[in-house]
Length: 320
Image (cartoon, rainbow, N blue to C red; front, side):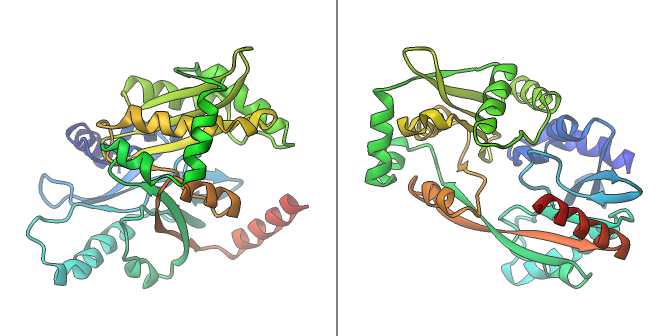
């Protein structure tokens, strides 16, 4: 599919309204330049539908999964402007079947689809399984005054409180951000899940494509209370990584950073996506920003009994 990948690079250069995770430069950063490919429907010169694919080798198993720090991949369909709603499901079926046919042989497939994909039946008919998950969105961030008024009273109070305790700054370096996140997680007994090298690739690529920025909150003693790394395209911004020092969580600085980043991104992106959480306390905090809940699909298929056994054994060891 390397020829299709080059066609896809040309396609990405001509489009300004794709989610950031679907751009070729993002895939280069999180997968490696030669470690991803593309399934695509290209009957003539225009790409009608596509699905990025990242294959990872685990022992002798080939698994198609999401790269680290990538919220979703899955199919993306460019619907004709004159497509009637009554014909949409049939068009989905045709495009998705062509994409599914291009998925390379694998032992396990597991991807999140974008919340705009509401029809996964073609995958179901091919033996795939679905789990529903949720993300939380602030729609249309161009009107910041209206957005702030939609925050809950307690969220607005916390933001005002934080503004008196910390100063907001931008452009924390990649190393400083990584060190802060690593240290805050260690305070909670958790090891950071992604490498410094991966983060620096994402950071550098996002900055060079004018699609990423760090923001952080620092007190008068120079202590960083919290930091965010946000990536965006015109389509949407994403709260990719939040780093909150548990020693200073009561300053509520993380809420202030979200608000300041939304204001910064007003006019640069249409919406702000918190990237969701199935953790009850986190979900409650996201709702306080006046968000809209969006359901999205996790689609998976295990094509190997031996991999299923291996995966179950590995999960048991992780839990213990």
